[in-house]
Image (cartoon, rainbow, N blue to C red; front, side, top):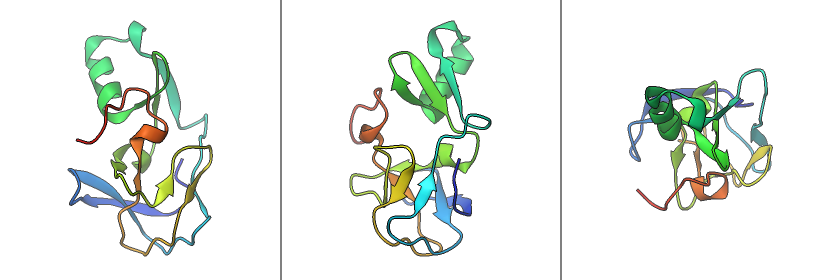
Length: 118
């Protein structure tokens, strides 16, 4: 779950993006796994439509297990030079993030299914 206030808006990176509604200082917690909201699914037991959705909006966190964030975090875009780290739980801001700035992460830090840049 995102710990900071955000909103969705058109992204210059891809489709919709997650934007900071407030200033975020470097080192602040931005996202942390929240079992009541963020759900993990075994993909092999899901119908094809659900598998497609999970592959698009989710992240493969273990072989065959996809995490689907239950809030705006599922719209976070990939960036080679992100402003948050997704390598550990919780995710932290790598630098200051201005209000109105898109929040980005490097999918390669946490998504086993990620194959590189888009």
